[in-house]
Length: 384
Image (cartoon, rainbow, N blue to C red; front, side, top):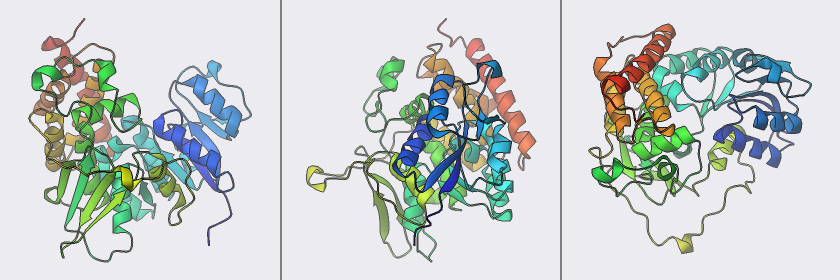
């Protein structure tokens, strides 16, 4: 039977897209979930609203503490929050390398982790997964693609022979290279299927997101890169598939809505009622289409897969370079087509450390950010 005792949550990245949707699920299931801590970035206004509604015991945000929202809580860092003895589940939804220390601390504390920080696993999968095994910490994937794979593998005793990760193709799937060079920030943020944060939406448009998901799948499911495929599926109804040695293929289908994978990561092994995700109406689905991704027009996918195969600190350099380049694009300092140029240049200059420590990964992250900014200046890519 379902456990009637509410699970106590810490949400790291509570003001972001995944964090906000996690709180939707808490609202829908107040008898099952209780918010103990909220960790946020600079969106103090939204954080103040969340504090007023959910009354967390612990709060963290970046910036001046004199601007702290009102409330009866303890201001604490995300690592302390994620390891507190009263916490059952840590929702790791903060993006980039900044979320890595808290994730590692939660793992060492043996917590259940609903993982939505794809960069953390892409950068440090060789450290994260063995550490989780050592400390008996559950890592439950929140990404819709990895949650789909996880659901397809449930109850299976056989090792899958292939994983197929689906991609919407983004808003520019049919654009020529000349057209891609001129796309605006506004156009890029108009994703055809999903509602997400700005950074991940840009990554979806460049297909960098799919490359990071390939690296994640490699670590989460112990699958060789050669056995992980990416297929463009414009309807975004099949979220991923798993093939077995007998030729059987299992797929997880659903509306393109993040509430379902987030809720499953919180409810596992149970399934709760879900009134947030619209049901599929198969009578309105005329066909399901698939095609190979074009790595010539969208080189970020190829760069990410190659960095994953290369291993070591290469994925950390990739993630750092991409984060800097995407930020430059969002602030209109570079063009869309400059993103893969910067990432490629950073990887070309990177000196790989084969078996990195966490300090090696964090140093690579910091150094690659500096190099990415220098490349943008040296190659005269900056628009102003």
